[in-house]
Amino acid sequence: MQTRTGDIGSFVFERGNRGSLRRVLAVLVIVAALLLYVGGKVKIVQLGYQIEALEKEKRDLERENRALRIEAASLSSPARIEEIALKRLGMVRIAKENLIVVKQQPKAAQRAK
Image (tube, rainbow, N blue to C red; front, top):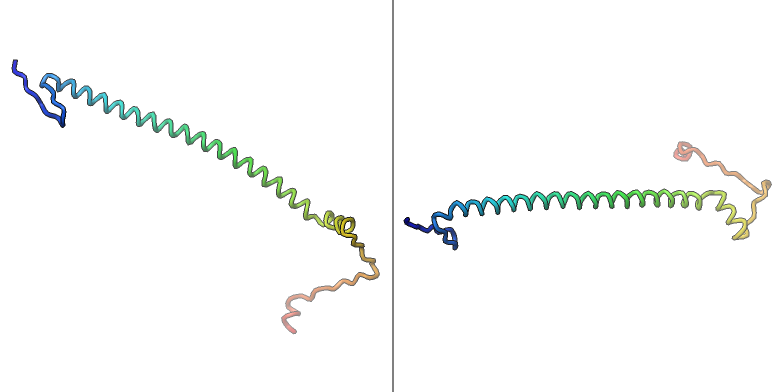
């Protein structure tokens, strides 16, 4: 039998081993494809966990925002401000006979002047 060698890159294979070279290359291509596929699936799962964590953080922040809005509304209520003015600052209510109500002129009347 005559043996011939084929030169592929820096590898030298005998002619009888070309079939095995193809098998090795096919296996390497399949392994690379599987690694890419599995890597993609792993990345999808990681992103799913990240999305879930961000959604939980969003819900927590929305809950905190609602609580802060309620607190801000209660702190700026006229009844609370009046109570602080009377008790802490020592202000007194004005007597009704000393109260003068000034009505604002309509804007059209102000422009005519």
